[in-house]
Length: 381
Image (tube, rainbow, N blue to C red):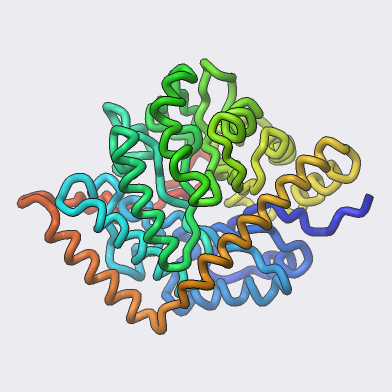
């Protein structure tokens, strides 16, 4: 069987604000499904526009989708070029939370649409526990399913109204996690019955509307050992059957330690695919991507089961691409970056007025700088 050169299901990260020669060659010769942007890629507004433009021009007829984690608060990739945006948790702390959550989504969607970025890897729909899971501080909309469904849903519809697609995360919920999956195992010691009645509710209510769900790296020992991204029981059986989701399953970054410590990139990529992930993200070590693409291509050629799963994943990838295109068709890009900045400033001013008297969002909530992980390869926040 002939398998196209491009594997079509990988999402990759870029090293900086400008393309390297290696990156240019890879984009020309073996275009990935997606490019995920981080703070390290965001310079000036003009630099970001040029980066996205160059990537798409190199990739030919089917350029990669651009994805970014732009939540507001401590995960605010555009923090150096736009007024600082509030965290998800902040909306429920003041008045008019629903309208402001939707406006926040519209502002972020407007900015991403201007920069030709198709997908916001948001909203977070994890449900906050009694204490915030490390890595989720102030990133959750509430501590009960209905609040999360309401506010995250409004944020998501704001994105869509601006022509930007969404991707709720982190299936099936890491709000009760024992740790931060960026740096190690995050154990959610809850029975399946609780997950179905509580943690999974926002995914069940919002997933089809979003068209995509991000699979988290949480470990659920009462269901299966190991992270959800490598679990067929969680990523296929539970996702596809328990809530009847037929959209795109996007893995969280496979270079996070909760999963990357388990095996080689090649091993965990195949395991993630066979578990049910459709788009698989490797966001830091781009120099390893060509070998990873060759490995996946070989496995598709030689194993009928891998090939069948790969074709299913490709179908979902292309369905989601068409969904992104439909959203964009009804929302032209803003005329100028000044328009984006002005609308963001209006939103931030009104949001600030809605806050209780004396309430101040901690500066660190929206100005947290990237930290270095154990291997020096991470830049997740």
